[in-house]
Each structure stands twice: as structure tokens, then as C-alpha cells.
Image 1 (cartoon, rainbow over the protein chains, first blue to last red):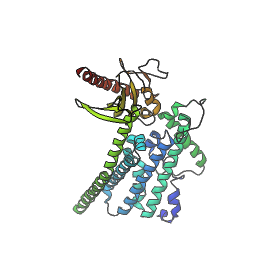
Image 2: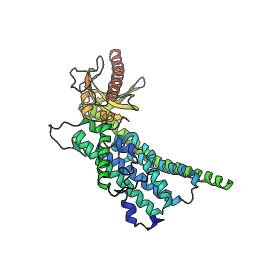
Image 3: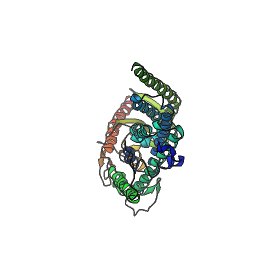
Image 4: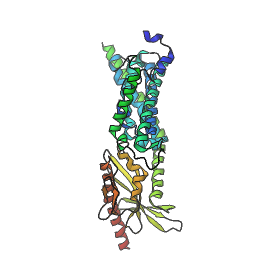
Length: 208
Length: 190
């Protein structure tokens, strides 16, 4: 149990860079690619996902001793789906505009493997406070990458940032950046750059 | 062995009951607010699609609900109605304004859609919706790609979302004709 000796801050910060869910683990790519055409959409999706992953991991860690191994995945999915539905209803009630912009991608957080991955790989084996920090770090790590992707694509594709116009009329938006290919280009370049930077350390991937 | 199975059944049942209960509670709290948002949006949409309107009257003809817009003096400004049609991924619902001579549209606002984010969902953006101001719908609403519309019954389709743009044009064409027919029959009848 080497993990037990790690300082708590490591549980929290590993999600930001070293084990970032998007750039290193390459998990949860469906929402990453689909909704990041503007910075605000990326941010909203990141926050909704953070809420779900933190709630689900915490709860899974609390009940981990009660759940038989054979039915653990089924139990986790029911828990995750409940939190996702809560997030979806909350967004529709409080932020109808964001809820509309994200459309069907909020319910789809259920199948984001980042969330099940954290519950299964981490929360079900670690104490509650560590599970909470791990999930929070992963959620925020997910969020910053989505916001970065959103900013790059919005600037190039719409010529704006957080819906504020950046350029004059001379700027021709690169339509391709807000279309699906733009998501692949941008993510590919980001992952490439990050791998180049961390390449010598040799990143340890924890794929499930 | 039996004990194990029993434990599994109990854990899953309890989890199911708990989430069901919690979700039912959250839903009961959230639903009135969601409904309120929807209604508020519907009302606001009427004033957006009918310019110079300060009040409206709801009228129903053969199951079709129309909103008759009224200006400050109580004159009719036009008619608004909800138009609906299948989009790329699901239903698109829009509020559409019709001028009082029943000749052209005065505006369009998307109420509900689940089109692709970044592509089809741009039908809900102002640039697209503004194209419906003053748009003629005879013989039908047409769309052009990647160039400015030339005819009075043309709109410019959204790049990468021709299907969503066409869905909007078709749904409105179909519903506006029905509404015009209803209103004309009423006019000649009285």
C-alpha cells in the first residue's frame, strides 16, 4: 500500500497534470471533443462533471465495504446516474441557457469513463478524504483542459473569447475549428505538446 | 453462497430505492422551476417575434393555439404561434411571428432543440433567427448555402448544419400555411 504514504496534496494535484484525465489518461473524450467549441460550454461541462465525479467518488468510498464485489459496477452506475440526473435537473432549473447549450451531453456524463474509472480504480480502495481530493483534482483537471480547448477553438473558430469579440472585421473565422475536426486537431496538438514536455519523465498511464 | 446472493440483492435493492427516492424529491423541487422557465421563455418569445407588442391574447382554433399580439392602443400587431418539426437529432420547437396582413414573418425564436452543439444548435443564435424578420413564405421558405440570400423567401443555411437549417425552414413553411389558412377562413367567415 504505497499509495497510503503519499501526501494528501499529491492525491489532489495529480489530476491537474501528472495523471490528467484528458491529456494523460485520455478518458472522457466524448464530451471533451463534443462541447468544447466555446470556452463557456467547456467550463459548464467541466463543472457538471466535477460535481458528479466528486459526489460519486465520495459516496462510493463511504459505502465501499458494504457493496459485494460482484455487483459493484452496477451499484456505482446507479449512484453516478442519480448524481447526473440531479445535475441535469439543477442546470435546467437554475441555468436554462447553459442547460440548452449542452443539450444531450449532460445526461451523457453517466457514460463518461472518467467517473466510473475514479470510483472503481480509486474511491473503492481508499479512505473518504483521499477519494474526495482525488475526485476534485481529477474534475478540475478535466475542467481546465476543456476550458483551454474551448478557448483555442472559440478564438480561432468564432473570433471571440467567452463570447467577447476579439478581432475586427478583417478576421475570417476558421469554421473548421468549431466543427468536429477542430476538436481532434486541437486535442491532438495539446496532448502532443504535453507528451513532449513530460516525455523524459515517462508518464505512467492508469487506463481502465 | 446463499448469503452472498442475498447480500447482492439487498445492496442493489437498497441502492435502487435510495436513488429513486432522492431523484423523485429533487424532481419535485426542480420541476415547477423548469416549468416556470419554459413558460417565461414562451411569453418572452412572443414579444421578441412580434415587434411593438406590449400585450397578447391567446386564441384557440381547431386545436391550434395562436397568440394575437396587441400594441399600446390595443391594435393587432400580428400573430405568433409555436412551430414544431423533426431536426437532426430531435424535435425543434420555435415561436414564429406572422404580420397582420399574413404576408410575411416578423421573427423567429427557437424554444427547444437538441441539435449538435456548435453546429445545429446555432439555429438558436441571433444571426440565424434574424433572417426570419420580413421573410416571405410563398411558395415556401428556401435555403442557400455559403452565400447571401437573394430572394425574399430565402435564408442562409448554417455552415455544417444544412439539415438543421432545412428542418427549420420546412417546419415553419408547413405551420405558417396552416395558420394562414385558419386565419383567412375566419376573416372571410365573419
